[in-house]
Length: 114
Image 1 (cartoon, one colour):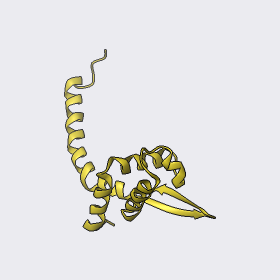
Image 2: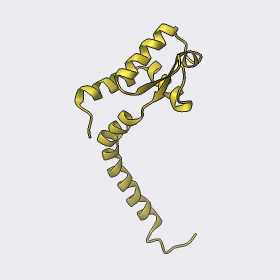
Image 3: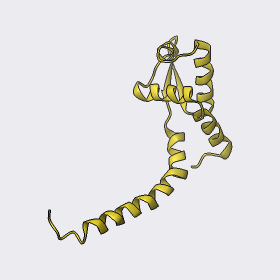
Image 4: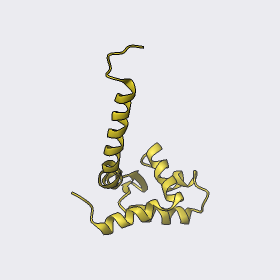
């Protein structure tokens, strides 16, 4: 199922900010972090990190799970996969095909040994 344009707009808006991308990188490195743990790696106030996390949640890039009184943040890679499937992979296929053909041409018919 493909995401609606307004959902993808939220994802692109969320990815446009380097601070939010850094938060996603932190979650990719160590998924399931608290706000305090994420703040340790950021050069911004706790309130700013909270606002960035809220935008990431709204874009469905971060999911939240409560464990008792702790709020854990998890990376949701599905919207990123949808972007890759819709825009990136279709451009990669042709480029990779051209590189494969060039490799075969440069290597000859494959019978030669080095």
